Length: 244
Image (cartoon, rainbow, N blue to C red; front, top):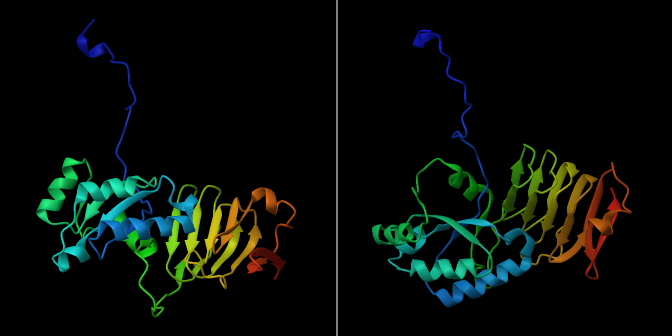
């Protein structure tokens, strides 16, 4: 039998690389005071602990470097990991900062890269609370595609979604949330303490809803009629759900 007639068994590939898109929060630092950073970070996380638990995070230090403020990258990473955040990258760093990040096995991103980090900054940016008084410059974030399971989305103003929010997805807004579809995941409005924030959706099947830190979970929502528009708001620290 000739060698050409012997067929090698076909083994399908065990892996492959694919391009994909993920929403990742970006922590933008404007101070190198680690004590203040840790204090304000903990305050931010207390507003929405479920959203930040085991959340991947990209660290942005370009504002620090514009001000010629250095920061201890190793100590900063420990501060981020302490409440359960998972740093997965740094951007805007100096040569020395990037070297320290790589020594800690933290990837370095280009500030001008057109990857998922750039997209994430538009939708989910964690910034330390500004000192009082402050002028609101919040805008409305419009999303036209469905929010898939595992995705996390943060809006600094109102959030409008023209599609469904799948189970396992999480959406947060400092203002109101409008969902023109089914809400099956988690929705947290007024995450900076805005008690006037409201949640509107066409079909309430949520795992969790929250307004200014006041929560209701799916067990509390089972008695709510589905397949019709509802609105949710706070009244005496209690979430009220009404038909629209």
